[in-house]
Length: 176
Length: 435
Image (cartoon, rainbow over the protein chains, first blue to last red):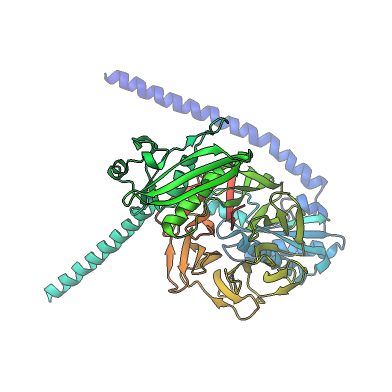
């Protein structure tokens, strides 16, 4: 009896060790050779300064605030939170530097509350962003606001984890 | 001393128990049907036409209508030991034993003009043996269900004193698909959800359907041009007219009771305000002027005032303003979210979407006392719409992450779900009158 238990225990340990051994090199093999050279290539070839907000290449540069074009809001609120001011300022810099740029601010709300009130709320959020862009140099003719209210959710589950993603303004460039 | 404390504790405990009992009772009340419902037997009607018998008989439709009102308790067909077809063959004793207070008998014939059917029926009081109704309802070939709804309307009117509303229709919006690949449709169906027909479809959002007072046209909001725009469409011909597509929001259309004006929300000034447009001349005047969101206008039945949603006090509440213009007064006071009012036909009650935290329910406010009563269990109930006789309130709710339509009797005692098409269904609107 005692020996069978010991054998079983040894077997379990052996299996556990072999499991560790097989998983470790796999992850190493995936991460090391592939990502390192790619990163280097990007930085040497393109190299836009992520803080040069007049550079259109930064729209696709994940390190630049220009690549972020969605602003999120608190429930039934349209105040632009401090954490998003930088993103708005970056776009204001781009828009004022490019007279041909045209932007539509699409305002959205989460599903709570009535549809028509949420149309108003979405517009209020769009106007809040529009106001900040104008104050920072964008001209009125470059900006347009459309409210979709709660009609175009990006997520359809009835909880806060989903709702916060829907309370948003999308900065959509119709011309760069 | 000790005694006093004990008494206080006992009293507190008692209060706690009472409040819990009251809470439990409220829940039971909502789930149960109406204990005071009138027992009635609607006997299957004899089919005298040479046409094939319809799948659902007239009597079955009538029974379902009466049952759904919450005011009637129709006898199950299998319990009908006797099936009289004329007044002479009724044995009232049998129906007294079955505890039916009222009895409906009848038959369906080919109409003499050869263009449809005659539903010939009679209503009896089982206890007095008095004949209360004896009528013929004539309908076209495809309209037998509609005819049955009219029979239910007449019976309901006779026994409650209030006109029935079973033969009215409902409009609602359905959405299928996900993300940017959606298909929105504006449907019109019978009041019981049968016979749904798409009036308009669009890949862009449709919302806020609102009936003209004669029930021939629907106003609604469509995003088909990339921004909200208000249209009015004839339900039977499909012909439609663009009413408003200015900058910003063009939303929340609502016909005046005489059909001459339309109240709506426009934000071309930069902020949503209520406007009233003369539908003949096209001229509009601004009714509200405030930095807040003013929207969801609805007319009082006497056309004197307009109720609307505004967050001018910080959170959305219902306000009332004279249709001729003036200073708005606040109507709702309970809770921090009351929106999208629907006014009862007598103008005495308003139904609202009532929010508390993350829960939205349908509540009714008595205009005389100001008292609010919550009618539905939530969690995301909205878009209340009074039936034209004030008996039921249709509303939108969510079930398993899907929008469905439900109805609750105005006293909150009876609640039911409507059988409708698939997809997300929302924004029901009851038509005012018979087609």
